[in-house]
Length: 118
Image (cartoon, rainbow, N blue to C red; front, side, top):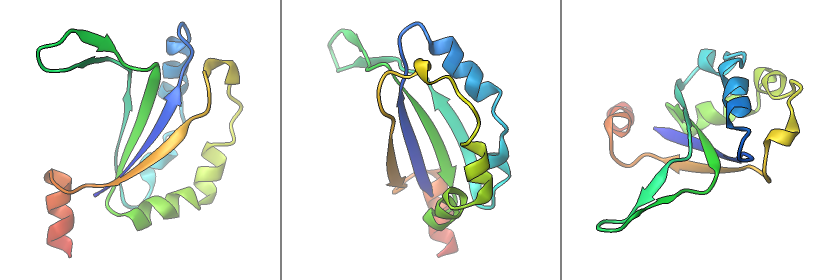
């Protein structure tokens, strides 16, 4: 399993606008070969054992799961990706530059499926 997380800083007070933008997206990623799932994660709280809850940075995560890194890379290089990411958006929603983090799953239901295929 390959996981991509797009970390997106959103201005306080603009959360509903950001969420609406994703709810109304074209959903073309969901039709891509090797795509498994997509989650939009809203900032929550961090709690260290025995400590008080603290707010997380005001950053949403858009997490996609893929059968393989190759499937993810094909998506990113596709015309569908370019078209999906070329739509007009209100950039005043954001509070800084987004960044991407990439992961290979070591353990979990998806990791087990990947190991069986090998």
